[in-house]
Image (tube, rainbow over all chains, first blue to last red; front, side, top):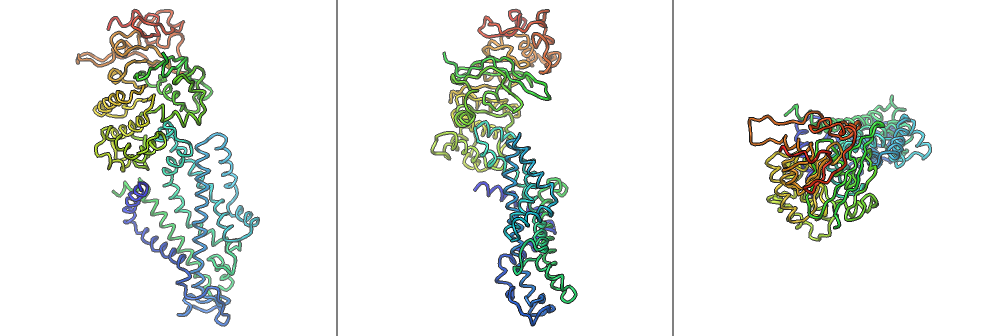
Length: 289
Length: 324
């Protein structure tokens, strides 16, 4: 009860700042649209995205097919709507995995120090030493391409970013006096990490995650485009791009529609992150008040 | 008689860049039940280190070199860490920190933090009622509503009251108060001190009160130990310390207190406290001492028993304090 109360106050305070920021409104509209599409996709899409209709292939936009049809006559708009869900899964599933592992490893490293710290940092460095695309290609080649493996692999690849931030923040929070007091009252290390450290570092993790949503969506599209993520006939914006670019001269809508979806969603989340960063940044707050 | 706390030849060193600093050097102290021991000393004289070694929370670079701390007849150093954490910290030994402003977790309400202590560190069943009663006892009006407020909504004095509640709610045998009023202004300090005095009477806890303020010590302590550069230079009952100090350092400290004569300039002790890595030979205080003679720079003075029942680490303790 008290915890929600605290976050409520904090959210209201930050929200007040964001209300004066036009970027926040644009972002909110786009993100709301994205979520509605992803959640209610099956109910709002005008056609079955898997139903082929070869006679009406490669059509231009019309009233029946608002974004035209693809090379085997499937409705592009419906496929686009259905593709929002894998994007959502990858973005939030991947982030959840990386934040979860990152927090566990980061706090453990910073709190215990010494050799455990070195081992965990070494692990982070090993993962970060590879260019992400190379690492992902190798891992996908080992595990095999699918939506689930994409989520897990992306989660692990991004994780060191969170691990490092969490570790750095923990190093400073654990020197706080309330941690020393908790220790003097006999709180166990696990309790100190859960009750005293994680709530106090979560804000910075949240900001970082906000900025990463957009790049996760891009990763999903990119890898699906390369055939390493969502597998056809399942639909994803990356898969649609891959199918569309072969027909760019005859049916440009096949390419334009998913590109637009990717650009809009990424813009939405980037704007939100930007606006959030502004609101949470104490310096920018002082300038305006 | 069995002493509640007995510190025996305690020696704590800090290591930094291959150099070692003797933070606490051969300290012998003891504490009876219900007694308030004031520890006075300048910054860096090792008094906080002593406090931290009793609850075994020394920073990793500090180590107890030798000596022993006996708590209720048992050596603290030999108890396993998990057992010490569970049965001693917060239960038998409580700690009041120096800076109340940053000693409460900012993301939880004050009530939740107090209730946690009651839940995990005592056997009290009625947690909420005890918490409210405790806060009321600490002089926090409207305790029931203030329980749901966050630390940033409390003033420094209020936070110190909450921390006192946390320390006393477990009814500890020993309380280590590490300069609890240093960060507060003088009026609040006076309030907290009088509250602390009431609490000591009620709970009959033994207290180690660490401070650099002789005024506070004269207010609260039964017995006073004066620290200088990691060593105890004088121990005595409060009244004897102030009436007839028997170590030149104590004498100089008392002379530095402001008195009623407003035209008089305040006395100062010439020189600085020595660097703990390069202590002077012989008596640590001799470079700044008015009574020094040749042998002070050659030989370390042991603790002599004085006529008034205390101890003094000065060869000339009989001469000291006459002038006051």
